[in-house]
Amino acid sequence: MSKLSFDFMFGFYVLEGTFVKNMLKILKIIGFVLFGGLLAACDANFAQTAMAVSEPQPAATPEPRIMPMLDEIIEDTPTVGGTLRLSMRTPVTLNPILNEDVTVARVLQLMFEPLVNFDDRLQVVPNLASLEFAFNGANVIVTLREDAFWSDGTPITSDDIAFTIDTMKNASETAIYSQNAENFAYYEILNAREIRIVFNSARGGEVYWLNFPVIPRHHFASGGNAHMMPVGNGPFMFGAYFHRESLVLVQNPYTFRSRPFIDEIQIIITPDAATDIHAFDRGLVDIFLAEIPEWARHHSVKPVHFAEYLSKRYEFIGFNFERALPALPQFRQTLAHAINVETLVSDVFLAHAVPTVSPIHPHSWLYEPAAQIFSHNPEQAQHMARETLTAIVTQNLWPTTEAGERRPLTILVNQENVERLRLANIITAQLNQLGISTAVESVPFADYRWRLENGYFDLFIGGYNLALQPDLRFAFHSESPQNIISYHSQTLDNLLDVAAMSPTDSQFERAISDVQMYLANELPVISLAFRHQAIVASLSVQGNILPNVYNLFANIEEWFIAQ
Image 1: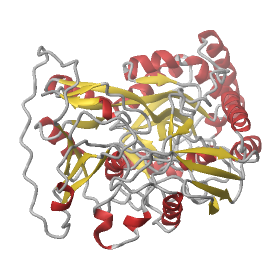
Image 2: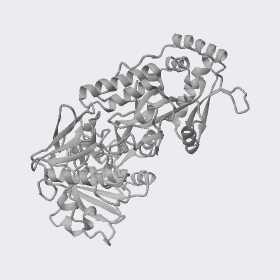
Image 3: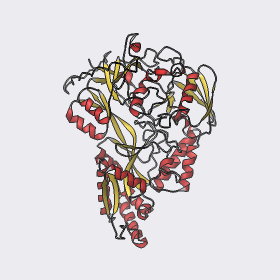
């Protein structure tokens, strides 16, 4: 897995549109995901005419593409040829193992295949290699597929996997895949296509950490400018790089995938996400990754189409267990019974999110739909509210100001996030109707983050960009410094630790189910939804466009450019 949170897969964020630093290194919560890609056919000399990375001539500014109108006929029959135009930040390296930038990693995913991929249920499936784990999870034999070649025609070997592991172990801590090999004790090359990886310890979901790209020893070990002129194994290969201007990818004739329809991919260098959107609006790029507000805006700006996918962005209601009222079980049960999660999600996210009962991705084979104990029940909410109010009075649990005056319970949100503000207002109204005085605190993101990190809140609405490999210790374990809700339970700690050490699929599935059921019973958080994200594409980009949670361009060979 990578630390990409798609925005690379396992990063950590608390506020919409903002990422708090990568997950707790101790707990090794990693994110993965890459987006980006281009296809291209070129003559035999093209990859060698622009190899001088030092002082090349700048690439020409792309001509804006004339956008078709909505009533024009969309092509159903794929056409061969054409150029797809993307964007990314300035790369420091095009070696995917050493790269630290998310946008660059998206593009590199087009040039480098991972050992394994994920199916529709987010289970690991073979890709560049197949896996055979020991019965006790102590090691795995990785076997390369027979049709695996580098873009220069050289066969991919187990020695390349060994070189990749060594590179990961020596990479910067902020490199995308730096933590994938942390549990690798050593490896044994068995033959040209097989390698055994021995783990320091058996742990739950170890197979997820094998989702990393492989790099060629014969190329990257040579030094020099090799890191900016990569040899890969994906559907596209390096064509040319113009420093701080653009990167060109062309079709890789040695890919084991089907040949793409698109001939070439041009990636322009942009300074930030806002510039990506501006470039799209001007017709300089064909695609950008959008949040919900951008989808709405681009419905009216110009004709576009969207390809949605269910992201790893998990939204929830959090409680401060250092404060008496939020820590009261009856109060949390009252709130769980009072809110109709499905209606909330439908009304606020407008079908651009999926309700969830736990912090496990709803499409995952590990998702436990039975983990819903306190579902929407207005009558039960009123009953629990009376119990809560009685406890508040008898135990003197009302929140107070620093001066000792009674104040309303507050729900903290960041004011930049319109959806969270709407959720908070609806929930506040429901609690007030039940007699529990509540107010919304909407503050700038910087204040919101500071208050969460320092415990100055009663309730909050926030989110995590979670890993596909669910290690929830960062959020709920008593010893985790990222446990911002200050929740402490030895029972939950034990369940989380068991899950982290369950070596087989069946043991891991049972352990993750037990964690979900505990969360459903004790309600340290109330789960709301996993949010959608989408590729916003110009109408010239056609085909079966199917982005997913781990790769926006997973099936790019099925895309084509309308001529």
